[in-house]
Amino acid sequence: MLFVTVSDDGRGIEIERVRQKIIDRKMTTPKMAEKLTDAEVFEFLFLPGFSTAKAATTTSRRLDFSWDALTASMLSSAASETQS
Image 1 (cartoon, helix red, strand yellow):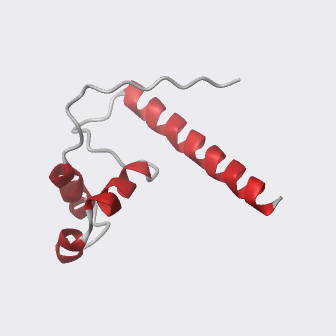
Image 2 (spheres, helix red, strand yellow):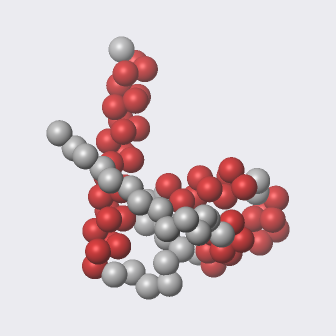
């Protein structure tokens, strides 16, 4: 059994900071980034390895890897259920 606990600092997501990281990582052009809706920008947060952190720590790297594995597992399970 897997239990996942999530906490929030209450500060929210700085959409422009995420948008800038997308540009900095050359995931899209600045012109295209301007056209992305907030919902589209938020989708980048779920991509493997994407982070707005200024520096990665050992803990954040482990959590990032775990999050990527969990997301992949959930997507795989969802796909299996749809095909059944």
